[in-house]
Picture 1: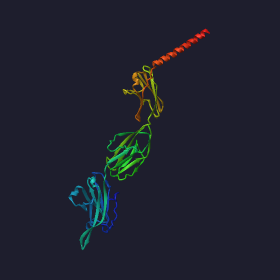
Picture 2 (picture 1 turned 30 degrees about the vertical axis):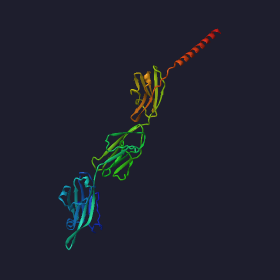
Picture 3 (picture 1 turned 90 degrees about the vertical axis):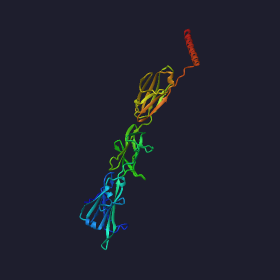
Picture 4 (picture 1 turned 135 degrees about the horizontal axis):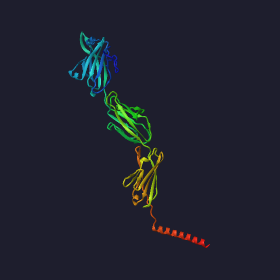
Length: 397
């Protein structure tokens, strides 16, 4: 018994004069779905209402065509080779109603196109059949589902950087400054068009579908969303073809939103060889959430690192002044000539911020010259004599 289906459920009477003879015959062609997966069966039905089986046999010819190639007369295949690709049967008719079921076996991409049911009326003249006139026809499309061919996922539209299917499904880290961003994801090549969405963490981002000119695909553009500094979140493009198993494609950014670059202000006085306790003090500031455990000093010639603590001839201390400023001091317990040849660096290293460093050298204080020494001695002697003369005058008077 023929039952109506959701797709192309009804074909009205074709009373056309272009290629069709005038007739009151009608044909309905339907399928459960126009879309089919590769390797599955595709079933279509041709129904001729108002005609009994005997009427059709005596007065009509019904033929199936696939992409223009004639397959059957009623359900008799025109070539035995067709039986490897198709099957056909007449469904148990109701009174004045008959249906033909044609099945395409193991559908492949090349089978995409149309199945057509044509109805011909046998024309008699002088009690003889002289010709067959096409009086009704209807087609139903075959669309073979296809997977996604390409993906282009951008986090920052202002940069020519994106993830594609050539990238693996691992997290791809990207560092950005705080601000508003509108990620976009373009997916092409599938049949039908894929469903595309962008997730931020476990929430779907709001956005819109943008028309892609001259492309069989879908582009989803998320609404501008605030990404705050000192944070990290996964942003994922997910695309899938409805009804096609294992068609889901996902690519993910691990978005690291760093703060502004920290600033440095250092005090570094001159030092003298063999003097003790030379200190260099630096403020690292203008960075919210700054922390002493992300600061270290480094000796330039050896690359030796000094985190807060005590070392051979060097002490490093750090204190947090407030939420956006720290103060760190490097103390050299005994200054040697080598310390003037090697720069020191104070480094701030944070996964959510770019590594920043400030380099400085210890200026050497020049010792007094011999001339300065004699001048200073003369001044000291003159001062002593004046003081002695003053004492003598006091005693005399």
